[in-house]
Length: 115
Image (cartoon, rainbow, N blue to C red):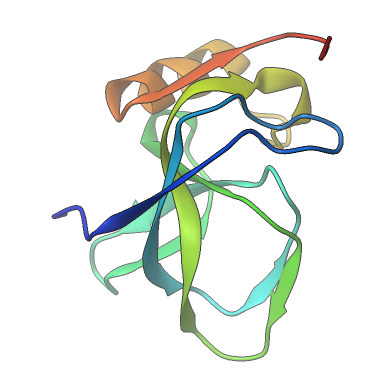
């Protein structure tokens, strides 16, 4: 997958999901309801992001709550120095495996409480 152009954002303000220097890119996303902090994986067969099913495939994070009635392109977090692991949604998947996969693509997670 080739990284599309991306947008730099400051840190989020409520229930801090990420620190400064977060970058998003617009990619196709499977229709459905998503919550802020949902972790995604890339479906190469259909060339779109889908909800995370395999911990080792973690690749991006949803930045805002959204409901998509059809597949469409939306901004997702593709790089960040400081993602709050307490606010990511991975279901029953192994956190350490998800963190390693995210770190491999430039998303660094840790548990923290905002100042």
